[in-house]
Length: 214
Image 1 (cartoon, rainbow, N blue to C red):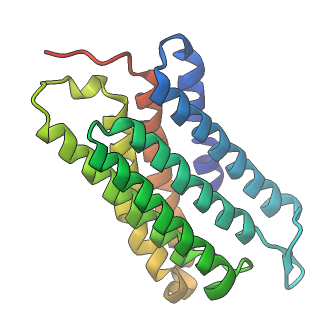
Image 2: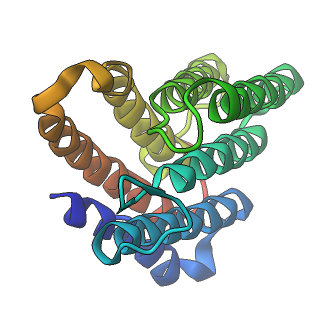
């Protein structure tokens, strides 16, 4: 299931390639991030299957440093995406503030709390909280605007749906992973299923054409 989850990272990339002539500026930024995300996913597969890594723990490859780095990259890319998605200056400023605070907390956790060699459960929790806040602010913006839009035509609607579905479930898994013990395999199965769903929603976002009003 984990391998299928990693392969699902190709869904939004394929969508971006197929719809490349119709992508708007925001969709292009998202497409770049999804490409980076896929590269991280495949790097993790290489680490796990071929024992390729700069850091080892107990003689085994340790991919935790890559995950720490990806969390940091994710925070700033999503902040950039939502910065362009928000219409109000206040919301744009909040996206920058959230990213700055989350970035500092993630780096502090990586170097002083959990450490680079440990799975970043705290870092993932920080990322999830940040993205949940940004996605909820976007949905609030949709409800607050006067113009009536076709939601199925809005790339950010699908991106936010993917973000919210992924983070709202996995945030509890990330917080509990250290206490799961022998049940940790179930954690990765649930995580993989949610990841596939989220990548499917991201693919829909990149298939969307420019916004239409009704």
